[in-house]
Length: 113
Image (tube, rainbow, N blue to C red; front, side):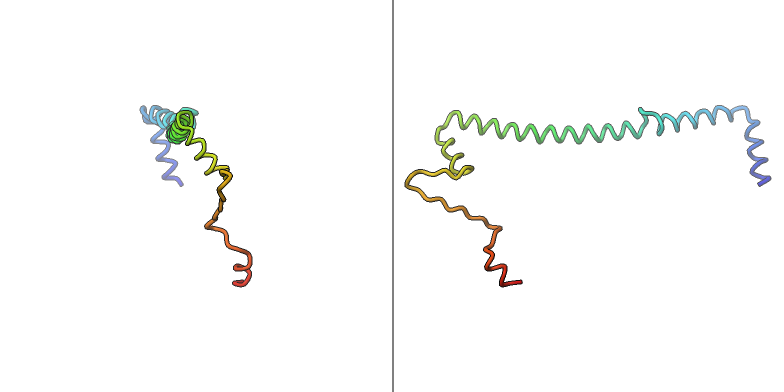
């Protein structure tokens, strides 16, 4: 304990030590504690990257919907196609069968248990 105390006392008497302490405390403050610190800057950069990729995905969705809207405005057959695919509408002389690949009848699953 005596050696550490002597070392600190000798370091305190150096003329440049006050500048080193101020520099280290300033770097710690600017690097970690300040709201404009390095870590806050890095976090904001990551957030900007995430939002940019989200904007790109929304733009792709918008472009796809806009192309489909243009197709619906130009081609009356496209309206019929959408009505058949999404809403299961049919003509008077047609029958519609909806097949789900993931579902199985209850009788088959009950026998396997």
